[in-house]
Length: 491
Ligand code: BES
Ligand code: MN
Ligand code: ZN
Image: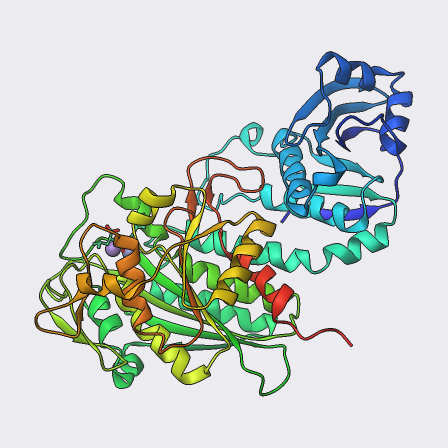
């Protein structure tokens, strides 16, 4: 993580200086001081570049004087229209533009303490990089930026505002690391081992292997796993930060560490993307780390079903009938519709063991959700309007946007089986909806939302707070959901 420190507002003697500037305002505070020190060079450069502080705009000024190598103005837009998200994006834009600088100072003296913290968070999120497997990158090609000094009017207050954000950023990075790992490194067992390390944060972590899952009767999950040489796992992570005995909130993740499709094998082109078919589980893991890291005053459980979906002589066949942990039987028409089979057993286990206040599952479940919503919104399916509204609001606030999709009994017709209680696919029409209808049969009427994140878990291009690659979509969203509605208040 980018090394972030908060300090008193004093012009740095050299290096790079970021000026977060509101739209249409004269230079003030440190920015005005820097302009005076450079004999008006900064104001002249901004004028020449027609920079007016618009949201998302940046202007880089090289060697304006006073020992400064780079001055970067970043627009904040109008003060009346400035949620934290805009400040975070400005922080991210600054990091993207200054990756070649070694140390960067931010003139945050005109920002509130919480805005200064949001700027730092955006910067940290954008500075993430997964470079574990690059051994030959030339030093001049590596980003140099390692430290960010935030010059705040009240550095102690800004630092206090940043304290709960740091573990959230670390949770995001954990998720991005897990999702980025290649599938020969991250399999169900090694994923579970990484979860075990989270006991250091105070999480209780329980790992179940094939024998325990078979004893429970996880026939749906085990059917998916049976074609792989890598054994399945289910991991249960518990954070007990709330009152003893208070019902937990519950998060469930699809963790298919590689999805070949199984016997219903996928085409070769782009199959490598299916290493991130465990993003739902990765997000649940990062979220649990974030909640524990910031000592959230809530009882939370995170459950992830970890399998590898492979074709082999032991793989399940189209036509197989499996008996899920709930007792309901499923005819497996297409072995590539495996995520719902894994989630079916984990959802049933979750509601049965924990009687949670609600369950939210995350899954890279269907290609159809990408056709419907592209890469802007995750699909949300919910049987509870309050939960849905809270999730939607948290999505707007964090920028991890959700679009509610319908659930309706009429779709059940499509997943009727001639031989079992249901089949695992409902054909192409409404493919994401029939998948959600399938999952609903395993929530036993508990308040529940399903987030289909297939279009959001991985990004092929840079975004202000997210370099391309694993996004960790959902960590900030669900952390916000918990913080806003489910934590007991401080005394
Ligand atoms: N993991 C895939 C869904 C997916 C596709 C995620 C593309 C991200 C990008 C899922 O297991 C799957 O294969 N779904 C099938 C379901 C179909 C067989 C009913 C699909 O979407 O094609
Ligand atoms: Mn699949
Ligand atoms: Zn899948």
